[in-house]
Length: 338
Picture 1 (spheres, helix red, strand yellow):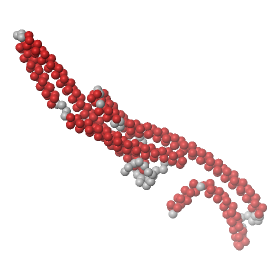
Picture 2 (picture 1 turned 90 degrees about the vertical axis):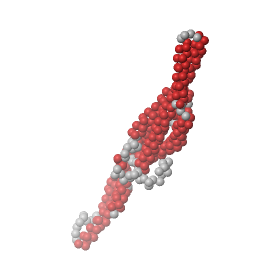
Picture 3 (picture 1 turned 180 degrees about the vertical axis):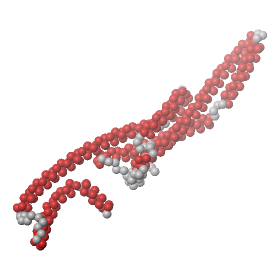
């Protein structure tokens, strides 16, 4: 019964002008029936309840006055309704415009999020490390890390995406499709961010090892040059055959032996090709995972999110409010996966 009354009340509020017109049409008929009833009561019991003696002329005069008032009233109602609809339309347009501005800001942040997971520059830096300054490579890695962290702050400031959805508690639509959409985006973003930062850590380890390898190779080359110079000096000392040359030769031979030991030690510290290859392959696999699987999936989620938000903008423009749909009652086809 209550539901039926609520439906009737809603229908009356929605079609109140039509109901008013029907009421004014029925009112004189009801009045006529009421007057006739009083005559019947008067004839039967002698009770006078209304003025007697109303004739057709009196009734026509009433209709003329009544209809003029009703027509004027209906005109006022239509004018008021038209004005109210114009005000409602202006209000809806303002709400939709404000929502569109927020949506544009969110779109820019989401684009920046996608761009922050730049795997091309990491791939290039790692594969061209032999031809690139180590310091430049480190700057690339550090800039990538800082960009990710800066974008994370912007992402977390987006309304409804990174919070705990406290306002959803007690909502009749909880969980709604908007909430599930946002959670899916949030979880995927943090998953990709974790993978990307771990990849940067692996890149730093790889660069450290390659830098140490290059430094050791330079040291060994310098040691070889010094050994060659010492050997030349020994040859000159033997040709001179002075009293001091014997001691000089002995000292230089000891120096050569020490430097050769140092070279052997550095050779023992060389990174094995298998280890270098393992590190490089690990980075390459992560780059492929992000660029070919995770990042396209995130873009797909963002497109679904923006499409759903655009739908809400249209709802604000038409109805002045967002229509939330309880999950999983939504039959809309989206790119989100469970």
